Length: 111
Length: 113
Figure 1 (cartoon, rainbow over the protein chains, first blue to last red):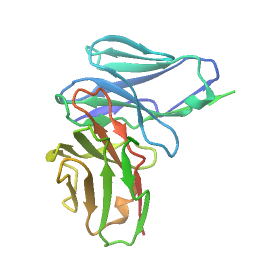
Figure 2 (figure 1 turned 30 degrees about the vertical axis):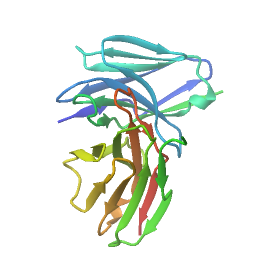
Figure 3 (figure 1 turned 135 degrees about the vertical axis):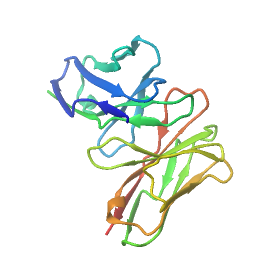
Figure 4 (figure 1 turned 180 degrees about the horizontal axis):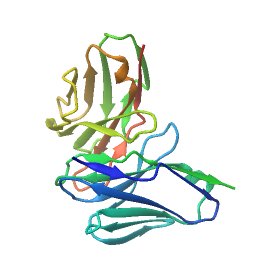
């Protein structure tokens, strides 16, 4: 079967750095994605890693290790608006195949 | 282009009734996905269209659920004989060929009473 594991909750203060881990077990692997979802909002795309290594986009970075079936999302210089749920998602098949999402990590940023 | 549009935003229905939701994708997006999300969970895949062809369907999907995308543009998701367990947010996501990520609509919140 398929499974994605990520912590259910993470808390941090403004200005801090937080790392949200994701481990996956899937029948196929064609990339790891991260999505952000604010309460009552739609998920929005943050990043995609198909190859090992770190991808940086502004304050957010995402890392993948295919040999460890592991990735993480790194959020730097946290702001209150970063309080949201963060989902890792895996594509098991080639282009177009649907993403399988984890249960999400709720990040709470306090002042 | 106003993004992915879903209608209605909210739907309350009695158990046993049929409901239909609509998704209008971003115009150049040929891929369209339906997901269901309950509180505290990630989106759960239901079905996928590339243009008008339904290419993938979740094995968990009850035969009470059916989806169409007749002209490769908008899509509808119908649930027949609704049950309380169908209460959830139904999300539509679309993508263009080669896109790295999906664009999600704001969803239709279904409540079955």
